[in-house]
Length: 196
Image (cartoon, rainbow, N blue to C red; front, side):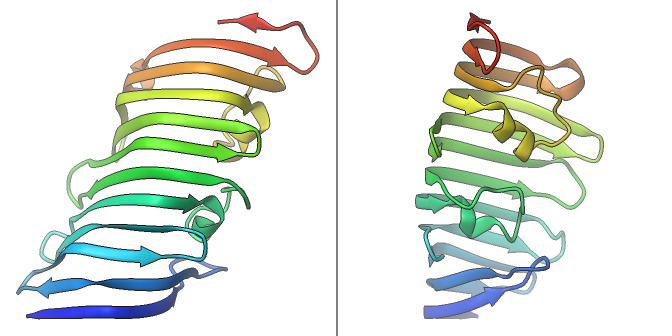
């Protein structure tokens, strides 16, 4: 079975309290005995827009999506992750392979994002399983990255200073044995600047 969606608007309440506000959804969807897929879906949220592909396997629960987000606003995705800021955004590409019985893969490429005076560019890829988080193909360039922004996104991180960092980071490997190459200029609020 095949059906075409020319224009759809929805408020999708995946998590409480706020629903995801989908302002426009268009694409051709195919439904098989155990799957749904689309070779092209266009979407718009209040301040974000993009297009991509989608495949959902009913028997396994596996989901594969590849999305080009030409215009992205963090505020549009706050219903999915409340720690996202009210302002900022940019552009990025995302490929997601969510698997029910095996580790899932997530990749963000061609990211060019800004939040206030902070800019972030590059790519990040990781594999996530029950007891595994493994980085691969991850290289980020950042400018003016504030310590409080880091702890907002990852509250468990204990920043050793308050201030800003500019530079590059290359990450690979599992969290417990991660290889990290950081080259950065650190500008603490209360101390002299230094390089790492």
